[in-house]
Image (cartoon, rainbow, N blue to C red; front, top):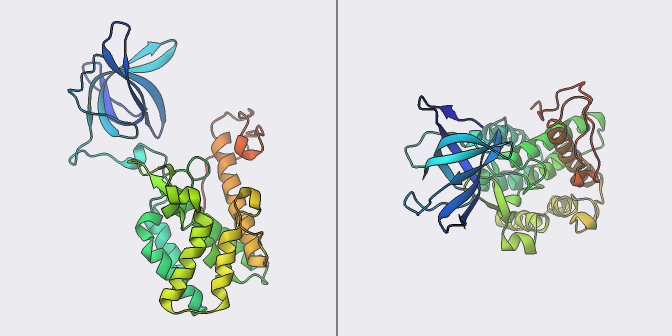
Length: 320
């Protein structure tokens, strides 16, 4: 963890409270049982003799903490001497505390809009620009998932633009693919996650909204396209094609698709979405083990163990 060492032997820094529970010792005194974390890891922590005087704390809160690292059962444990919620004048980077995209969401958004601005299909251009400009603030900072692929600050834009880049290369190889239709679907396929997922104080997803659970981002995404087309006075087949790409991009009903993809661009989008998510999860898992070692079983990847052969860098990066 990224603590600053102090001359008195203590250390301090900004952390996220991954867990925060008020408990009682055997003699009846109150303490806080914590798990503190930053982007580099986490450890257990204890605030003994807690009487509430230092403030009220809860899970996902960002705090400044001071104390000492001690050993308990052979593992590091932080003994809290001082703790307080962060204030407006505190200087810290959220990207130091939670997993974050290594490329800024604002930059990726601008790259995306530049591509759409050049579309020759005016219907697709107007629909896509209207939606992404309306959702910009959330798109550039939202994660792409609750726990799996791209579950990081700015993960939604990272995942979206990864698919856009792959889609562009596919169109060079297979000229029968309509590039602007495929890119439009790629850009909009997860846009309703800004509505489906509920953000925590750290900017990561902490769960699903009630509407997200009941309807989901595939159906809501198609609804957003329909509403936007009506708002712009656009009536054309491209609207139906886009809606189909959104409600089918999970491939099969078992994974939430309302229908299976039924034309080329919809099929390609579904495959690229799955491919990008898989590559991210494989890299994320193998990056945690040494070369020549296997990971634990990955339930999201058919419960397979994965092998790190060591012949390439397993840190997930995309050349945008």
